[in-house]
Amino acid sequence: MKTEMLSPQKDKNALNTAASLLKAGKVVGMPTETVYGLAANALDGDAVAKIFRAKGRPQDNPLIVHIADFEQIHSLCPAVPPAAKDLAGAFWPGPLTIIVPKADCIPNEVSAGLSTVGVRLPSHPLARALIRAAGVPLAAPSANTSGRPSTTTAAHVLRDMDGKIAAILDGGPCGVGVESTVVSLAGEKPRLLRPGGVTLEQIETVLGEIEVDRALYEKIGDDTRVSAPGMKYRHYAPKAPVTAVRGDPARTARYIREHAAPGDGVLCFDEFAPLFTGLTEISFGRSDDLATQAREVFDSLRAFDDTEVTAIWAQCPDDAGLGLAVANRIKKAAGFRVVEVSADSFG
Ligand code: TXA
Ligand code: MG
Image (tube, rainbow, N blue to C red):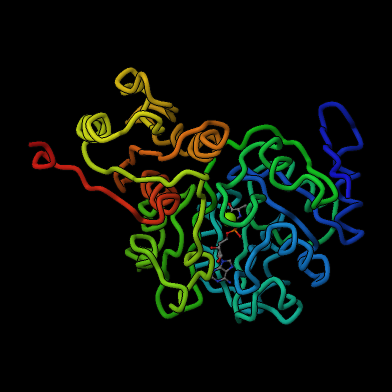
């Protein structure tokens, strides 16, 4: 299959071409404000099955369904919980996915056998235009090969999906850079399943204190039942093994300087880059600039695959605000191999 790159800037029919492919049951790379998605008609099980094949995604990992207007949620969920309306009012359109009980029209391929569905109303104008033009809600996971870092540019998508999907709609680089926050309203209490572009603190201004899934902080075994099946798989990983280093930024920089071997790579905060001359250093924003870190983290992890590094050390922000999402992606890229650095870490 030839994968067509559709650029609305060069071709005024790009959006309509992408929509026609979706209507014909094909898979299309779709820009969103968080990361690129691999979209297909969410109501067509055969179309959705193609997404799983293109990604190499395990069958038990459900997909998020993307809508263009709040009212569309009623066709996906028979009884929308009041808390979903509150969250949507505060954060939609935007980087938030809400897990709710699902309607019968949603094929098993989307929900992976669960009785729930994740719904998201993205803020990216091209994403919403595409959903409207396709005339159906669009199921879309992140547009990376399963296990690889997510894709935040059309070029990333082409790299992973060339020959595997019909087309990619180029919407430029994603503004947020980490995926949506996933909040489940399917259990007794609201629960954070994945930190993302909307912070936990922001969610709690609307819902009050919520539960936080332990899979955010620790490695989950293959045989464990988890609330978001995606959480148990190796994720976001570049080819070289990653070690996440947490603590005061000046200390983590010093720790890495003292432990890195020649030939290692360092994912570092901008202001510490000069410390790592002689190593392959990729910086992803200042230590106090979480928005830039979020926007750059996947591109930076991917960039190590174009180098010869055999191991990667990563400076990791703390859990406040957007740091929870950035740190979660780095820790998962590291398979939860995390070094906590304190004053005592130095002899
Ligand atoms: O920002 C995003 O959310 C991007 C863009 C394309 O919208 N999408 C995305 O999808 O990140 P994906 O499939 O890569 O991650 C979705 C996560 C997975 O961990 C999955 O297990 C979880 O959400 N999830 C989806 N539906 C669920 C459900 N019904 N119950 C629990 N977890 C669910
Ligand atoms: Mg993903």
